[in-house]
Image 1 (cartoon, one colour):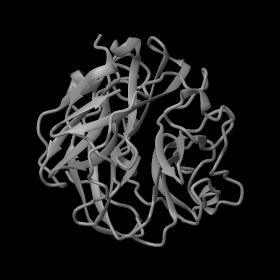
Image 2 (cartoon, helix red, strand yellow; image 1 turned 135 degrees about the vertical axis):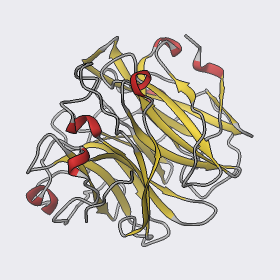
Image 3 (cartoon, rainbow, N blue to C red; image 1 turned 120 degrees about the vertical axis):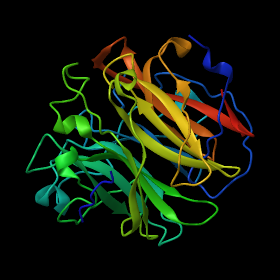
Image 4 (tube, one colour; image 1 turned 90 degrees about the vertical axis):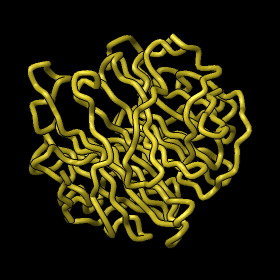
Amino acid sequence: MFFSTFAPIPLSLIALAAITDASPSLHQLALRDTMAYNVLDGQNFPDPSSITIGGVTYVFGTTTAGLNIAMTKNKNFDDSGTWDQTLEDPFPTDNVPAYSNWATADTTWAPDVSQLTDYDGSFAMYYAAALKSNSAVHCTGLARSGTVTGPYNDSSTEPMICPESAGGAIDASGFLDPTSKLRYVVYKIDGPAANNGGYCASTSYTSPNTSLMLIQTESDGYTRVAGPVNLYNNDGVADSYNIEAPVIRYSGGTYFLFFSSGCTSSNSYTVSYVTATNIWGPYGDRKLLLGTGDDGLYGPGGATPDSATGNFVYHSLEQSNNIGAGRQLNTASWAANGDSITLS
């Protein structure tokens, strides 16, 4: 179905606003010293998201190295030397109907995996792929698997979310509200795709619409119940007319909308968040979470915190202002204390 739109600080101790994962758990997490950089030894691993099942942490990322989706794993997240350096593909496109019907293989971005514990226990992977009919535009699909490692399959004949004329829908992330037990999906309207690549391609192009949108779904993670509603948008030149990678988390009566801003390819990329007392907003003033210069990082972004474990994953540029050199996978832990969070 198609949905329309509505209108240098060391990271060892950074106190920031509280963020928790989609997990039902609301407990306080003990801080662990797990900050590590480039844990995949130079391999390109953009847009990471993580889930821990049976004590093993699985991290999924954008297509790379001939894989439609990249996946690595670690039985001990706290030990940065034990990450699986051999990447796997949990979502090969052979015999996947979506890649015959509407999606283009090996164009898949920003996967996000949730276990539908409130539905049938299966695993749902939100992803964005380029349209066969319009390769400039990516739209969101939903693939499923009975196991976290896949193989995932999507039998759809059209995207789950696809405002094509607005530039498409990318960076979808699932969220199960631990208080209401309702399920949501937050995503980005990819305005730059409808505007010659946007400001990050040329300062002569502006992309006023990179809205972060929210829908409520049934427990299947797909069937729409309410929305979409525009939660937040970019702040013009200050954001290079771009925000993306939204994630919603909850703690102590507050919803946190976590996002990246700036140009993915440059040191302008950052991670920030805004807060609200209602999931639908309004969301307040932003606070910066990660930026260039923090522990020598360049352009950190695509962060995902996990409340069930305290794990925190994100990427950054391997080299200053050079996306061609790849993006490295970094890890940390976080712990909430009232309305602040400490990374370690």
